[in-house]
Image (cartoon, rainbow, N blue to C red; front, top):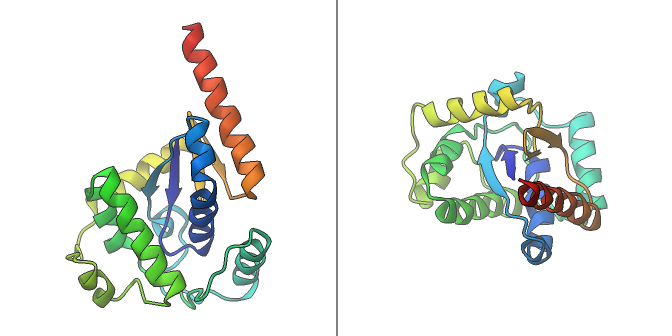
Length: 186
């Protein structure tokens, strides 16, 4: 199962933290998630540098609070996440997870600017100037019907958003169970 995300999205940070809490139970259910960055700006037209306030920010704060995910430093602007996302796509899956966790922590826990090269330099990342992998991954997400982030792609179907721990466990566990049953039938 894939999960499309954008580092600039507070909702994706919240989703990551919810999934982190339930990861032992997901593993026991045989659920393995593969996180894939995309460029939300390219996908939807949401502008980089756009102030993140008003209704959008309020919704993110309400969801984070409802799901018991502290967000110490929600960004004031929609950050340019392309360099970090392009780098994440170039990493092996194991290294990508560690990198993703470090970026989330630096941005949402410590309040660092993802768009600045200082953070990426500290993470030992040369900020790419072009984003071919990210453009290809975003195009693929769009072809799958992904319209927002986070989006959990179950088979060929994207399901947007994040729910509480128990709902996510039931939802992802049921899908994994059905996939195993289909595989046994074939």
